[in-house]
Length: 88
Image 1: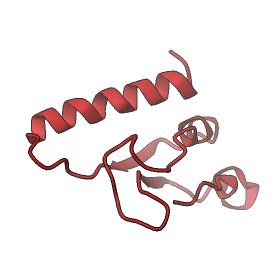
Image 2 (image 1 turned 45 degrees about the vertical axis):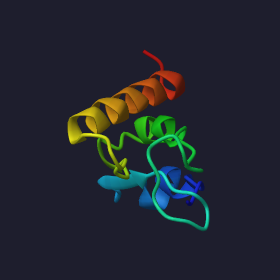
Image 3 (image 1 turned 60 degrees about the vertical axis):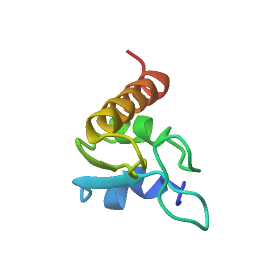
């Protein structure tokens, strides 16, 4: 989990980043469901300010939960993260 977003705002790289892959994970561990790891989702504000328009958000599967319910849970997490870090 790399929480250093300086490359996104660095003038040398800013215009060369077209897509960013974001997922939640525990430091020293693997992927976990969104909101359960150590990822700093304030990166959404950095992405918005840097005008990064394409973000791939990877979410770990939740055993025993249907894909539709996982999608709904992840959609709500992303909505709340955007609302918190960017505003409505």
